[in-house]
Length: 134
Image (tube, rainbow, N blue to C red; front, side):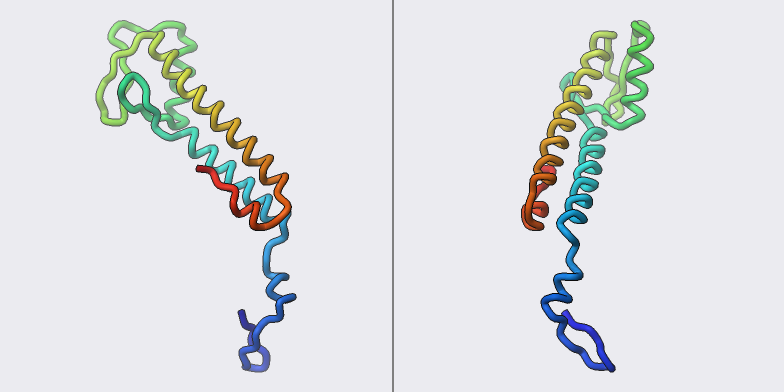
């Protein structure tokens, strides 16, 4: 790395290079933000259920809450999968769909908390950089 002094390109000292690097605490905060974004994304991905794939986005989750709060579904009720096929569902099927999303979300939450603890426990920049949501 270089700096320009009086029109001349001069190499940075190691001290100057080190000053440009984020501190361990800054890197930890950035990593936790990154992990929280990955967690949010993981919770809205499509999900396999009843031998097909359904959307798992926030709109779907909100709609499930409304359907479940009714306590029943009408005859002929269906949920549309990601291929736009109408998949017939009973109230119990809707409960199972909600349960599948809940189980996935809980697993993602536990994973997030574990990774955040690893970040907090890290003592070097390299350790923080090695922590990944996979």
